[in-house]
Image (tube, rainbow, N blue to C red; front, top):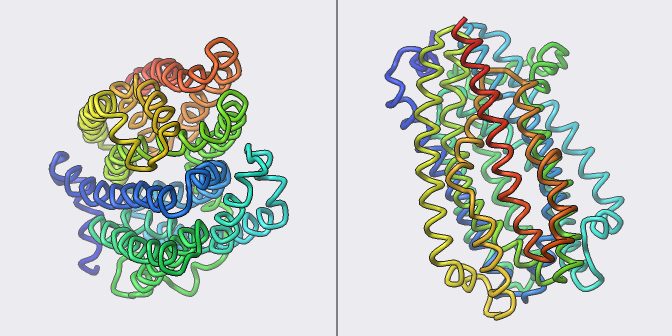
Length: 448
């Protein structure tokens, strides 16, 4: 067997803390690089176009979440299934996962692109666009949708690279994409004067450059998992496995899409376009910290999945415990930073005093429960990592459907604009309680 098989095997033997650090740090670096770019990109748009362009960018969030939902369905689902198959020493099934991830990404990517382009205006108005913000949202999303297949394929294959035992390579590819994006975005916005569309073109082209590297990686026959002629056919058993395991992040993103639609409409009702722009600013900043936890989750996923497949349950519990501790520490730091320096942070995005004031208030309220959010994020991802698709889907949708949407419909009527911001910490608290209950039950089941 080639030396490339060594990396997946060590997931079942090496020290957990060493594995988690070696897998999580590259994922964290990659996620942070991408998240930092999102922040910088918003600053480019806010200062290179105008404040209302931030509202247009905020309007596109539901459609971005919809595209991310299908990307997560295939990419995250395929990555978790691949880890489990590697843990079971089933090379053929693992190779079929790769082939079917490629097929699904092409089919779904084209379908979402065509649907989005045909119904663009109706979709954006539904998402909360006004006549003033629609042109900005439309300019951005048209370009993003044209590159939708590239985005899906890039996301899916980068997830698989990490599960195959190449976390550092996955990090390097993501950081390369971010680097290309950082170079192209100011060039397109400030030099070529392409406005918000320039930011979209920079995103698509940077993802395309990363996709080329990913395709080269999997074309290398020396790799333990690589492209082979007989893996590019629909295998319904593999597809069922990908979809069932990927259903949790899919539902999470679908619910996020619905939630942002409601948020945007409530924000427009109680605060206008500037409130939508403020939410876009705060969301970018909070995602910067959430991406740290996502990186930890991505580091945990192949370790938990492999050892669960190998029935080494003590190692599964250990990696979960350590990931929760690290994630909680990250979110506590985020809480302190955003509560102490909200105005300074928000002022980086815009020189408009009203938008800065609204954003600062939103940040202080939305960050209130971050110290417990890390636990909820890690535990939900844990169930996905071990193939417990149904529970993962329940936990992913509970926060959004059972808690956040009712809060969004009820609290703004009582507290106005602040009620929109308040709905987020309320739902986080309730969903964390539910997540803890499911985790206790899972520990008892594994103990038996």
